[in-house]
Image 1 (spheres, helix red, strand yellow):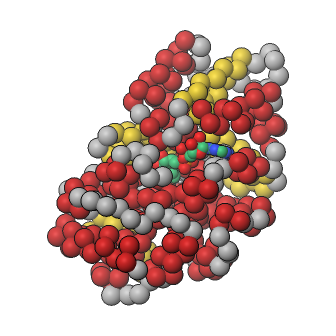
Image 2 (spheres, helix red, strand yellow):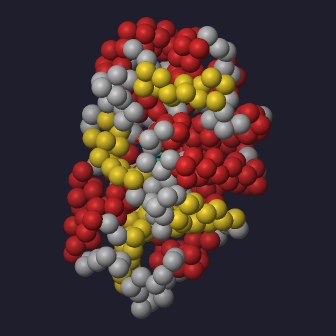
Image 3 (cartoon, rainbow, N blue to C red):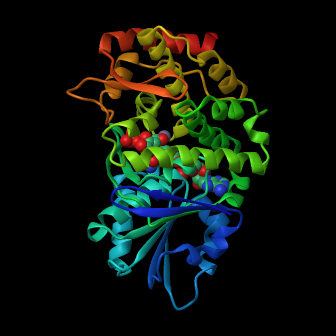
Length: 359
Ligand SMILES: NC(=O)c1ccc[n+]([C@@H]2O[C@H](COP(=O)([O-])OP(=O)(O)OC[C@H]3O[C@@H](n4cnc5c(N)ncnc54)[C@H](O)[C@@H]3O)[C@@H](O)[C@H]2O)c1
Ligand SMILES: O=C(O)C(=O)C[C@@H](O)[C@H](O)[C@H](O)COP(=O)(O)O
Ligand SMILES: [Zn+2]
């Protein structure tokens, strides 16, 4: 097992990564909690809920709340129902919420924990590859129909318990989705990491040891940034590479029509295209495009309304005075946040979707 400590100006918690550690979950908690509410989704419940429940002694009050699987559950209704569950089960400021699942459950249950009674403890128990990203750093949120994660907070967990054995049951699309954030961590940090991810054969056939190595490295990249800039006043924006277009695409297509990681993959290519125009550089855009195609990331988006898409990009949280700010890549590991005007973006976006399919 590996453990990484995340230490910011205001808090500290450990991320534990290993096989089968869900069975020993109580041993990773900072204290004994008498009342616990496990939040999970309908797919993960069938696979891992019993394991986690059984890990607790019978004298502890352990409740469960199950939300429908998928992005639709990052909604005001799911949020409100969970708050009602907290009240009815008499959770108080000494209780614990366990977020058992992928980024959807983590973001949703984390936001419930952040706001119920103005904040109670929660732990992240991630079960997707993507959640190597979402479980670390304390961003919690639900979506608004107009835009992703518009209702949220920075609220770190008291621990992250990442049982990588659970990743064996992930469907192909979720492996692909999670790997987009692994690639992002490579692009924003160092070439060797990026190359080591791209040089593997298909991501669907990776060995456990290589997968764990990639996840550990990704978590370290994220931890280093979050420790310096927890509330995203500066360099944390680099973790948003690919998300300006990615989030707009998720909202425009309808939440759940494309996974978060698939949207971020397209968003990273787009950010690289904009970077080439702004800096006149050549980034590894062709290399990434080839790899994404090989791994069957969606590239065809018919009838996309590019004007609406650019308008949605303005709702991004990095925007300043109604102007879009994009995270651009000068070269691997070197980024810059730049204002990009609407006309230029509109021009690039139109060609971009055509070229995505042709190349
Ligand atoms: N807070 C952050 O910093 C942060 C970072 C990245 C992404 N996110 C958010 O995370 C969300 C995406 O997370 P996700 O990709 O994990 O999606 P998800 O939570 O919807 O999980 C994907 C699918 O896989 C299923 N699943 C989960 N674990 C499984 C397992 N072990 N075996 C089989 N099936 C399993 C789920 O039921 C779901 O259907 C998005 O809403 C995104 O905005 C947040
Ligand atoms: O942790 C961060 O900071 C990130 O930006 C990580 C992203 O992968 C993640 O999708 C995050 O939820 C996006 O944040 P948002 O502020 O753009 O909603
Ligand atoms: Zn993301």
